Image (cartoon, rainbow, N blue to C red):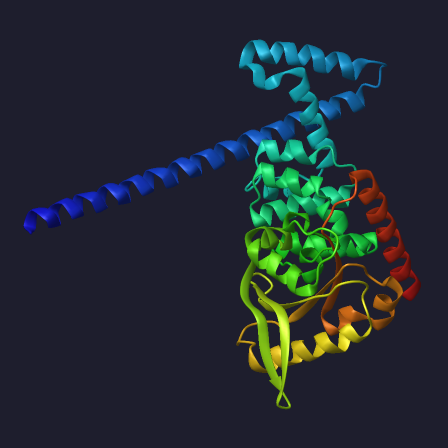
Length: 346
């Protein structure tokens, strides 16, 4: 018995010491990454300053090539001409050193390389901040960019000044809002639904592919219940899906609909939300929000109903994806229309 106890004690000691070593290795790796990435920004910034001061034709091209050859000889292949140009781009698109210092605590140089080609500053800042706060891997970041996540979020459809304010709040306070979380449309091509299907088929397919569905919803969602029963005036009501979002600290009610959005869906969702607020909401939580998933939206009805004031989001779902070019056209068109509507209201 005493021998067994000694073995268990030694195994626990080994486990504890190994955990300390791994923790230190991770900390060292993060420190090295942050130091190197800041160095790359400083190099890019220094070269940019030099080429701006000397405006002779072709000077910038020559100085980068010459400097790269000298640095490769002295410090190795990390300073190839291609990498040097990335450093210059890095300093050009992230000009605020304080923002860079904040980002590199979580983002690696490879993350930065994925962000550099993005054309719009607000789009780039969105991905950078969401990557930081949700700790995306480089692969996840690339997948989010490729799926046009920014263009599908509600925040992209706001005027530029409002987007800046919300991203600043995210950067300064790590505060996520529903407009950063919910998207439109949702890509549900992984469900394998073709041609004709009903709401039950859709719900069953989502539950079969729950992990994929949660990945499409976004980080922070936890599944709570299907066909949530609510008894109101001795009458049974059923909510299709109930989730909880950890960072929003809210219950999220999801109702699945075939076909186009109808105005009557609003009152139905409001009933669900008020019941959840009264019977399920816990101390410290925010009021529940609703997401109505439809095969097709009715933009004018949705705008007139002012659903956001009731805590309701409406989004389309796509069980088959169009070409990327067509999707880009549709999303950019939707963004422009939404921004004009907001400007007209103001």
